[in-house]
Structures are given as C-alpha cells and as structure tokens.
Image (tube, rainbow, N blue to C red; front, side):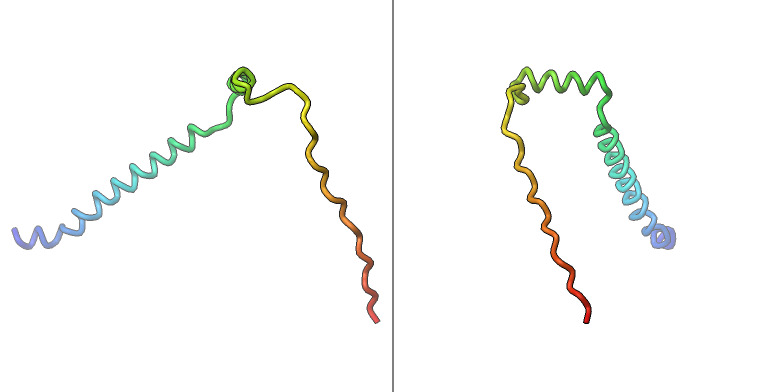
Length: 79
C-alpha cells in the first residue's frame, strides 16, 4: 500500500490542477463570447435607449478641434 501511494501522489496533484485550469479557460471563453458585436436590431435598440436616457443629444455641439497641420521642414542637403 505504501508503494501505491508514493507512486500516484503526483497524479493526485496534477489532476485537480488540470481540472481547475480547464474550468478557468472555459469561463474565459464564455466571457469573450458574451462580448460579441451586437446585431443590427440590438444596436438600434441600444442607441434608442441611450437617446431616451439623454446620453446622446441631437443638439448641435461644437466641432472637435482640428489637428494642427504638419509643417514641412526643409531637407538638409548633404555636402
């Protein structure tokens, strides 16, 4: 009996760790699947809900600041 326990104790550690890793990975897969892009009907419903809550307003707002134009620097001539 002593020999059997001494032979299989690594297996008693590895199997529960493998099961825990499998459960952890499967939860991550389910979480990623729930963050899939919305279908068109769900997207319009979310937009309508945001408008009704006042999160999106149809009033005109100030435009975003334009980006500064890039200034061309003269190339240094090799001598």
